[in-house]
Structures are given as structure tokens and as C-alpha cells.
Amino acid sequence: MKVYFTFFILAISNLMYGQTIRFFDEETNEPVSFATISFGNGLGSYANADGEFLYQKKRYPDVDTLFVSALGYDEIIIITETIENAYALPPKIDQLKEIIISKLPDGKFKKREVEPISHNNYHNSWLQTVESEIAVLFHRIENKPTKIATLLMPINVKEEVAGKKISVRKFSTLMRVKFYENNNGLPDKEISFGNVIFTVTEKEKKEVYELDLTNKNIFIPQNGIFVSIQVLGPTDSNGKLIQTKTYNEYKTKRGIEKIAVSFRPLLPLTNKLSGKQTKVRRIFFNDKKWQAFNYDYNPNSELLRNGYDNYGMGAKLHVFEND
Image (cartoon, rainbow, N blue to C red; front, side):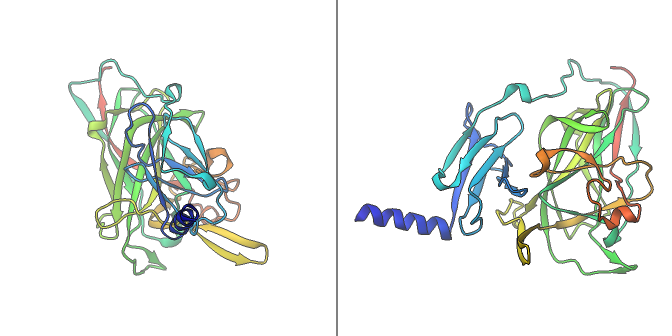
């Protein structure tokens, strides 16, 4: 009788308070920070910096399987009915590809800048969700060794509608920058420079967020590099990721529809760049395939109708004379 009672208490506790699952490296036992957790239905979430994810049956009643992945690791599949407190992710060495430079360029360099393009118009901005990722391609300057020293990311904090500023509630959002090889104009294999994360709040005074990458030694390959922005979710007052539901559910005539929650800051798109230079993907949907931001991606987009089809990310670059 005591055994049954114990199981009952554990079941009720998991339903109400949830269960913290820890993901760690199988070889080093180090936490796998910000692992991607897909629910298999086009939605998902992320572990925090300590490799922990809070699973609650009450929060995710129809999720029976978790697909957990991270750069450099094999994906693992977890059945929620038999969930455990910790899981080891096996390293997948052949998947982890970095740009190896035997000798970094040194000496004098020239400073160059790719100008960012920003604005405050709410209706012409990209609403960020944890299911989406947006990427921009950067090229070498004059085919010389080119280092990305600072990323210049337009953000829309002081939003305007019809020229009038609208009030913005408090927010604190954790975001991640990722890097990819260029394969015929689309992001391909991810290039690891570690977890490059930053937090944006409503207190940000500039329209362009400057992220210093000098110490990362990010040199652009011969055929360019894609730089992407990804929302991980809201943070607490200490900048730590809050484990919260990343989508809302609505009852419709067709049943329950799940709509991803959008997070500030918005990303202002521009109509001042030619061609479909910006690439997007839904991380938990369509096998994570990248594509241009066009009508194939969203046939009902007001942004596309108005010609706002590119994200004007810029960068401060260091251009060296010799390899």
C-alpha cells in the first residue's frame, strides 16, 4: 500500500510542479547548454544554460515524445511516460565542423563596416518566436582575410504605428547567434564558435544592438558565412532563461490551434536591399529546412506585400592584407 501511495504522490507532484531533466555530455559530464527540445508537432523549447529543462505534464498534456538535439551530438528520443531525471547526449564528432585556421592573420588590418538598416515601424518588423531563425550572408572584403569584429543587429524597441510611438511592456529576452557555411546561397552546416548569447530588454536605447565578437576570431570563409539570430526565450532579472510555455492554444471549429508566442524585441525588416538575401527556417518544422523569406515561406505575409523582405544586419569587419 505504501508503494502505491508513493507512486501516486510522485505522479501528482510531476503533474503540478513538473520534473527538471538534465542533459549532459556523455564523455565529459558537462551540461549541454541550450539544447533544442522538439515536441514533434512543429513546436518546442530549449534547455537552459545548465542543460536543464522543466517538463510538466499539465503544461504539455498532448506531448508524448521529446526529441533532444544539440550541435555536435546525436539526437536522443525521450518517451514522456517513462521520463528520467538525466540523459547523456553522445558526441557526434563528424557532425561538428569548425573553421580551422593554422595561423591566424595578424599585423595591421583595415576597418570596414557593413551598414545596418533599421527603423521603428511595428508593422514592418519580424515577430520573433522560438520556432523561427533568421539569417544573413556576409562575404569577405576584396577576397582578403576578413574577421567579424562586431555584429550590428537592428532591433525595434521603441515601436511606432502610423508615426506614433506605442507603449512597450517590460521584457527581457535571451537570444543566440549562430553561424553556418554557405551552400549555394543557403545556410548549410553549422560552424561552432560556442554558445554566443546576449540579452535585450526594453531599456535598450539604440536601434542597433552591438555584439562584440572580437575574441571569437570569426573569419569569413572564401564563399561567405551566414549569421543567424534565434530567440531562446524570456529571462528573469538575473538574465537566466525562464522555462515557460512558448505557444498558446486556441479553440477553433477545426479543433485546438497552437500559435507560437512572439517575443520582443522585434526585428525591423527593410525594403532597401535587392534580392531575397535573408533566409529563414522553422526550427521544429519541415526538417529544419532553410529557404528565402518569400511567398513560398508565407503566402499571406503583409511584410512581403509591402516589399519588406530582408533583415539589414550589419557588421564591423577587420580586413587583413595577407593570410
